[in-house]
Length: 270
Image 1 (cartoon, one colour):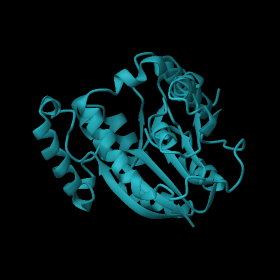
Image 2 (cartoon, helix red, strand yellow):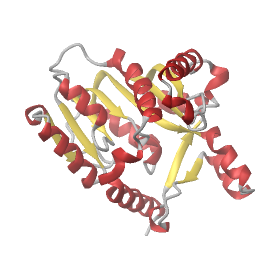
Image 3 (cartoon, rainbow, N blue to C red):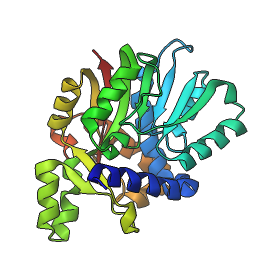
Image 4 (cartoon, rainbow, N blue to C red):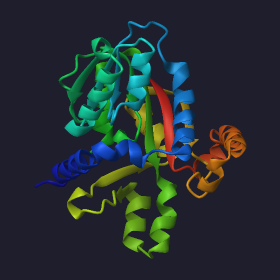
């Protein structure tokens, strides 16, 4: 089996397995703050016209697409893992939004099931671009299904965030792979669920998007502050407000973005 096929299989297998508890894994005050930052940066790029079609790629359990559907938009939910789509379907059914929502299992590397130049907005939150076997091809596919001037809002893993992990393990091979190729491994407990994760520096992401035919509208680190290490503070609402204010102040500073665990961007199809 080719490496890309193995990665695809492992990626799908992992996400099929964790789908039923995915929302629990990413729950709590720290993650609510994370999602608030993500949503606030997405809002300026939501179409004014409720008839504008939206696709949530790598939708997982449907957090962002569901919020848009509740606001009146027609949303297509797409994910590599059928179990993820099933959780999203259940939420849509519970909230009586079925008339506005459709579902399609697809890999970012092959969006041929979607019509050309159809969507006004594409979401790819939760790093599906980083999980794609070949991100340039995935971006080409996304660009194909976006309308001219359509917008992609997505997040990816940031390269330098993983430096400490490899340094602490004295893993020179892993460190070299990360810095030379931007690659690391998804460290699932089950070995057959480990797959390549593509990480990006700010400069590398800018270059990739421009080469793929996108104009960058927004780019920021998410999060620059070490939210995980600061987790005890998230039990205090006042501390959360201060942390979010600090994060918003820092996250778009070029000198700070290399501290972030992820990068989020909005880019317009040229």
